[in-house]
Image (cartoon, rainbow, N blue to C red; front, side):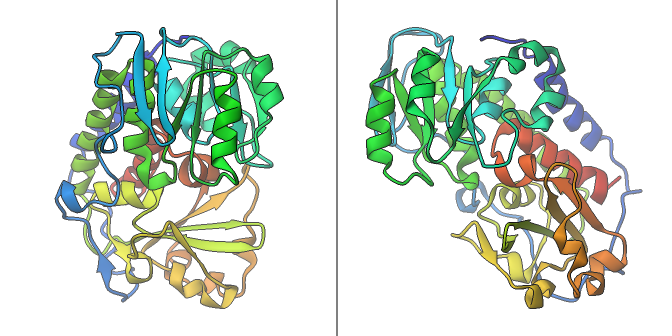
Length: 347
């Protein structure tokens, strides 16, 4: 299903304009930042956590719009014979990428207890409400229903290799239904995965334009923040409480925007680290962005150490939607996270 792209262009363009117009009146939290050493991100592209180019050896090598095209991906090669019209997105973040490129998925996988189409995507693409109402759940992102996918008669299936039990068997089953392209997965690879997904659709140039706009917005914010405006990313799901490092989706966006992280969250090579309720001080920073599901209150707020955190004392603990911050690693979510950081850190 094809959709208009105007809203996405306005989102990225509007963010860039807003950031370029920010003045020195932005908030400086030098008096309220925890005393821990912060990790900044004044780095070249070569050492950034999130790759900015398509993964080595992947893609089709064909110009946009040319079909058939044979796409090299993380489980082999797949030939896409014509411009896909009915696309199933098994993994989180792929619906985001599809909508950003003008395609509404006919079926999607999702984490347990979440909406088929996350609210932030409904908000970002209001003109596509009727199309998104038709989008069907195909079950869990880790164990999708092959039968439900087959019923949708897709002409392209997208899935990532991360978090799947027997990914080889799943790929074989999905490939028997329709051409299937496998991206790498995990939030830190959102840019390279976006480009690979776009290549399969014959829309790689469009994807690159959106990444370029995002990077311009991030660079604009980087010129406005200060090293003492440290930012913590915190989430609680079930019995797990986690802080997110540089090699996470939100962490990579903070790095792009030159936003400093507390020392306890400057780790790389791992998305997150579990902390106990007694280790909540590892979540402290000048600002805390903590995940909340469906607008509900977080259990974090009831922990004994919560009120002792610097960010909480200074009213800089911000409840954010889990979906764009911690579940869906895609370009529209990235702009949402970047916009949230900008509004809070520079006003």
